[in-house]
Length: 492
Image: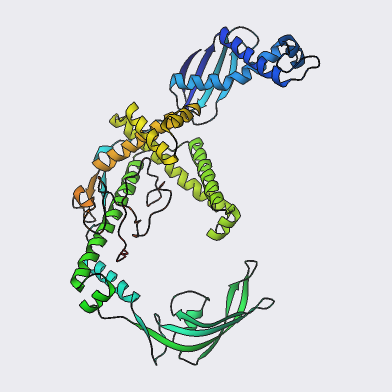
C-alpha cells in the first residue's frame, strides 16, 4: 500500500491511497472466511461454505468484493494516516476512484486535520504574580479567626445586631402543606440562613419579642409557597472574644507566646501565598500564551472535547451513584446551561492545546523513546498494571501518539513557566526563588518546591487536576505535591 498527502484549503488534507491487488485478495479471503462462519447455508457446515456459494448468496462476486473493501477501508485508512503522519480531527470522506470491480484499488480520503498555529512573541511574555509576603493585616485576620473559635456567648440586654446569636422558636404555616416548627434554635443574626427576611426581623429584637412576617419558601415540588412565620425571641447573646495575649496563645495553640504563634501563622500564610502565586503563574502564563494565537479553534476539536467532558462527567456521576438529573438539580442548572458551560471550557482547552503544541514546535521540544517509556511506566503504576500490557493496549487502540503528545505539551508548559518574565502588581521583577516552598516552614516540599493542598483561596485543591485556577487546562503534567500540616489551620 502506498499513501500520499496533499494539503487542501480549509485546514483539510487529501490522502491518496493505492492498494495492490495482492492486498485486495487478502481482504477478499478474510471477508469470505468471516462470512462463511456467519452465513447458514443448507448442506454446508459453518466455515465450509464455498466462495462461489457465498457470492451467489450475496448477489455475485462484485457484492463480495464490495463487502471486502468496506471491511478493509478503515484499517487501510488508519495505516495511511500513520504513514503520512497527518493528524485527523474528524471522520474522513472516502471515495473509491479505481478498482471497485477488479484489480488494484485506489481511493481518496479527505479529512480535516489539526491546524498548526503560531505564537509570535512567546519569548517576551510578562506575567504578574501576586505577593508571596504575608502582611501584618493577614496575620491579624488569622489571629482573629482563632479567637472566634474560642469565643464565648454572653447574654446581653440590648437589641440584637448583626453578629449576635439569638435563641428562637420558629413556626411557619404553609397553606396545604405541613407546618414548620423549630424550637430553641441558635441563630446568628446577619448570617443569611434559614428563612428569607429573618435577619431583617431579628435586627433590633429583644428577648420576649414575638415577630410575625411572611416569606416565600420552596415547596415540596420546588415551587415557592407563601409562608406565615411566627418567631419568639428567647435571648440575645454576643460573642466575646478572648484577649490576644500569651495566656490565650498557650491555650489555643502549641506555642508559649503570642509572638511565636504570629510567627508561625506568618510562615504558614507565606506558604499558602506561594502556592497561590504558583497557580496564578500557571494560569496567567497560559492565558498570555493563548492570547498570541489569532486563529479560532476548529469546531470539530471543540465538539470532541465537549463529548469527552460529558463522558468524563457521566463516569464520575455514575461512580457517585448520582443521575444527571440529580446533579443538575443540585447545581441549579438545566441541561442547556451545563452544555454551554462545558463548551466554554472545551473551547479554552482546545486553545491551550494548540498554543502548547505551537510552543513545542517553535522550541523544537520532542519526547524521546526513553521519556515515552517513563510516561507509560507512570501511567501503569497509577492504574496498577504493567508497562508492557499498557503499551500493547495503547498501540492496539492507536493512543500511543496521544501519550507522546501529552508529554510533549507538558515539556512545553514547563518551558513556558521557566521562561516567562515575572513581575509583581507594581511591575517590579520577581525572583523565581520566592515561588519555592520552604521545606522547614509549615510543611514539606518536593524537589521542585511545588506545594499542594491549597487553591486560590487557600482551600483544599480539586480532585481531577485537569484545570488551573482560572479554568484554563494545564495542558500537561502537573507538578508534584506535598502535604501541609494542619495545626493551626490557616485561611487566606
